[in-house]
Length: 248
Image 1 (spheres, helix red, strand yellow):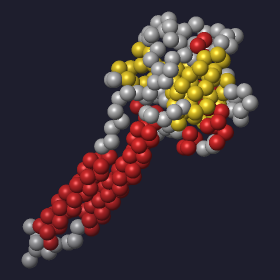
Image 2 (cartoon, one colour; image 1 turned 90 degrees about the horizontal axis):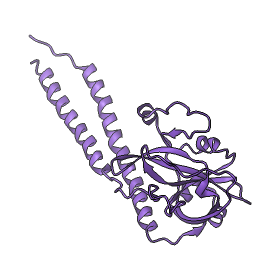
Image 3 (cartoon, one colour; image 1 turned 180 degrees about the vertical axis):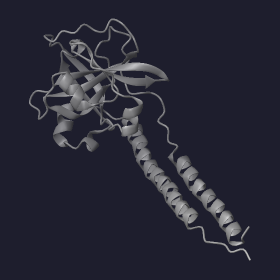
Image 4 (cartoon, helix red, strand yellow; image 1 turned 90 degrees about the vertical axis):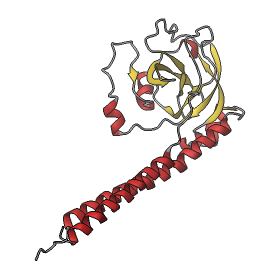
């Protein structure tokens, strides 16, 4: 007579895998709620009137509350300010986003970083840099709180080597403290400005503004995928367990 032993190893492995799949599905549901909030704020932003930056920063210092707020500010010397470049994509093309510092007198922060817009990768003839220029430049833009890159992002897009002295570095993400230090800013604001108006209207290669690409919201589909895989896993386990117990 053939005896059947209960497959403890298979059972434990299945339980662990099932728990992981369910956790991933639940995580996607949380991501769905977060993404819906982002889309709602972005939709409201489209018709929001800009507020003076100093009043916005005086009202709250919490970066989460400052994200996606439309502001207006005048930055002395922004058109000829030193820049750092941030790697980005626009409509599938590689672009460099130019980031400069906007000095803030009478504020808790010495300056706020400004994403002046993007240029095609490899474009020549950047705007003239003149640190002594103080010509005021009025801009309208949106405060953004950059996402912190995770370990996977850093492994996929490692930071390049430091550039020669005096040259701007190509950053892989909005590292506000690092970029601020490279620009000589000691106390940067915890958010940056994504300019919607150009600091250099005479330079057509510079395209200000947020990305016009639609923000994907596929988290519900992803959640169903993970939950579906969990169901398939249980079905396979049940079939194998039935055969094992029957001694086949």
